[in-house]
Amino acid sequence: MAAKIYTKTGDLGKTSLIGGTKVPKSHIRIETYGTVDELNSYIGLLNDHVGTIEIKAFLKEIQDRLFTIGSSLACDPEKEPLMKIPDLKENDVQLLEREIDKMNEELPVMKNFILPGGHPAVSTAHITRCVCRRTERLCVNMIEHEVFVDPLVIKYLNRLSDYLFVLARYIGHLLNVPEITWKPRIEAP
Image (cartoon, rainbow, N blue to C red; front, top):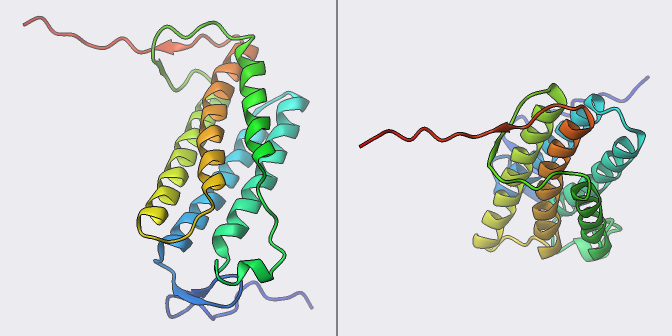
């Protein structure tokens, strides 16, 4: 018999961090790692929309790093040193930077703000970027409330959102989808 997915232990609005510490489901740590999970799901959706093997493979790597981040956030920081939780590395940030630089070499210089859209893959990349920015803001909020977050997590998420913005442009470039430039409405006085 397969294990049941429901445990009923959260029916009263509490959940356990990795390590056993009980917290309310409304706790900022739960909100944050739940948003990491949402981001990871959008990365999966984006992966379903892209066609190149290289981008697909890189997005899978990002999903792996997001599981690392989620594990770190889901763990009671006082108990984490005793557990075998995977770590994020500075090299993970550098890898994002190299991919950004590589894509930017093929893209025209951006002279205007661009509006998300033009193709489902481009739009999905922009939605994913927005969820990434929200995740980053939640991590910063944790720090402001003196809830521990590894600073490398914030750095990675910041660079990931940059990567996703450039990826949105790059996908449009590969698909020959013109960028939609923002033309601000300026009314005469």
